[in-house]
Image (cartoon, rainbow, N blue to C red; front, side):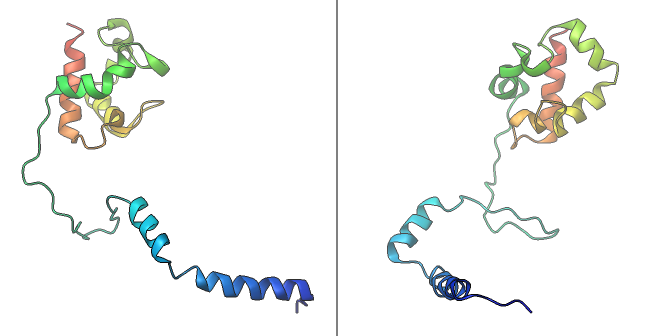
Length: 139
């Protein structure tokens, strides 16, 4: 059995009193909470639907737009080992694995490249088209 000295008992009492008050927000704290609350929710359970209504019409971006928005920042200059767009020598090393593997790496991320090249709202099909667009620069 653990014996608590007087100071420990006072600390526990102080903690219990003030931690229970932390559950109730003052009007000012409630305003702050509303300003910093997340804009969306993440649902990880299978079958749970997001209650936020999706837009019925999604904008389909072409590969050139995705490349110019997300990919060019690394692939134009070769940042962190990214193969430069149009550099046949660098791309040949990667093409040996096959276009499907290249596309999968682009979707899931590979080495320093983040998943989907930071285009988190891109569909897998859009990423596939963008990879093909980048490979066209080799011709």
